[in-house]
Image 1: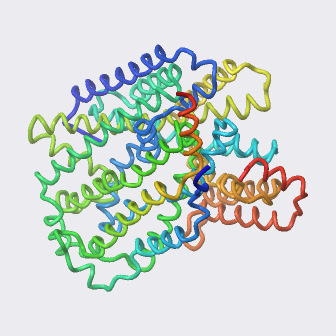
Image 2: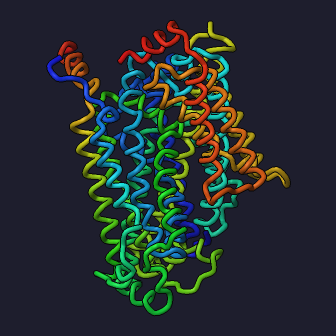
Image 3: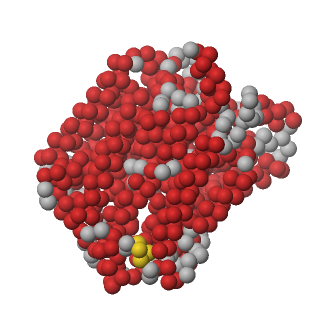
Length: 495
Length: 83
């Protein structure tokens, strides 16, 4: 992003954002001094998040800075075919209905803190819990790495290079670590709320500015009719396949992200959770829908951009709009500050979940079960800091070979879903089959991704998932589950 | 407990409706001409997709409100008990 218009005002707005986030951390710390002795309080906000905060913290897991910066260029290149981005975000909520109602109930009953803890409770198998934990840690680590790189690029873009990439990353990471350390889930959820509001306001101003200064959809449609009618057309055969697989894949994929699952446990009550989901079901129109329109307007505003150039589309549109008058100037600065804040808010959620898996599942369950909660928390927090430091080094000195191992995230995270979801409903599901499925799915998905193997145009993560499900179900039908085991599972599920 | 527990996954009818909505949300059933007719700069097939998306959101809200009821009653009792 090169935003010639910002410079010093960009630096001011970033400093202000940073200070507000720190303020939230200190405020949360002062108001909740007891949270550092309880995993429940620290990682789940004491299971007391209300509708609005819970809503925005779900919002932050689904919509990141990438939605604003990366989606309009896709709409620019694909035209109306990219309208799929609206329904696929709605599908995430439908995917939640497959498991969230029951998982919330069980989370409350057993005081679950992490998704991995559900595996422990359900299968009582060290192998499954450790494999699932490692998959989540690895996937989350790479996801975090991606956010760190995006923070650096965003800051240097917004300030016109005045603040270099490295300083941008360190500044926001240090702030994130401080407020996360001080307030845990509460800090994260409160900052998510502020960041979400800033982002929504900025995006709306960008839409209004685009309509005023570039003309609305009819202007763009006139242009497309003459120069690129295919962008108005109905998707063709492969286009429809791609559309459908996006609907299914994003729906299930985004719903089973570990930090998304963990938020189910933080809800104050079932009613709160339901209301948050209900609102989330309508958000895609205001987020993905709005940025889609911005991308379509871009087609006539900046015609003929190459793929690389089009990636800068939002920056170009914002620069033009910002140069019109003072209101739009500050609105665009706010927007880009909001974009960076949104990336930070995605990163802080990931980091918190990362630490919780260390605290609760690996250290707290296997390494030192006798430790006090205070100590477990400390180990989780410190491991989080070490992990972030390593990821920053990776971001600065990208390895020349094998960089694909840092791309794997969705492919791995989705492999925990069969054990997680099927295990909620099917007493006969055998722990050996779950383990074998998870491992096989992971290996196949990783192999296909690293060596760039494609089959029938379906994503490698989905091939792994398919194998995983087949092994889970087939294996469970073949291996006889003892009456005792089946009864135990029934007891755990309890309905 | 006065009302039975309700869980969306156990209600087959709900998933039939979701299936129908998913079919409506995928642009496989439009005649070629739908890409050429524009309303306020939006092709008519895209308007139908947006309408189907709105239906999906509305149906989700309905299901969440009326067909998901596992803990709510207990929680309300707890709250009353605490007061």
